[in-house]
Image 1: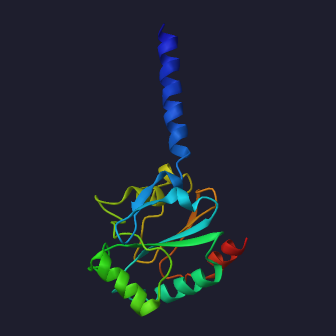
Image 2 (image 1 turned 90 degrees about the vertical axis):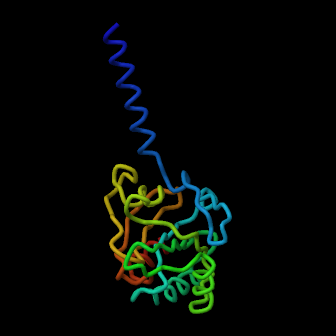
Image 3 (image 1 turned 180 degrees about the vertical axis):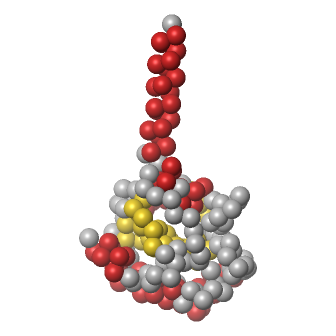
Length: 180
């Protein structure tokens, strides 16, 4: 009887552990910048670059480069998703409507922008827990260092790695990955 109970407990914990390992991008739902639900499952089959953004940061001009990369490679096989966040130096203080207007007016952003979220701290969005914690993404711990940190996701929704904020969205690591 004790062996049966012990085996049941072991199997239960193994199943929980396996479920945690199988988590991927498609397990998350967010809201777009207009407040509409955005199921990340719709990105199935595409490489995805996720970027936390800010409008009043020294790295804000990366929006222009992100848009150039999106114009060249975006489509059926590649997508960029922007997540405005106010976690670093209060550099994204605006409302979603203000952020959307800023991005379109100043950088012509046409890639999908999501509603403002938190990318660190007690109120960190569940997606960012997955992106930044090895126990959830199965690859690495990658706490968000600053605005414009980039995360690469493969066509099956699996986490591949991150690119530091100061690296250009058109750096060799990203462009070579997109072209693979």
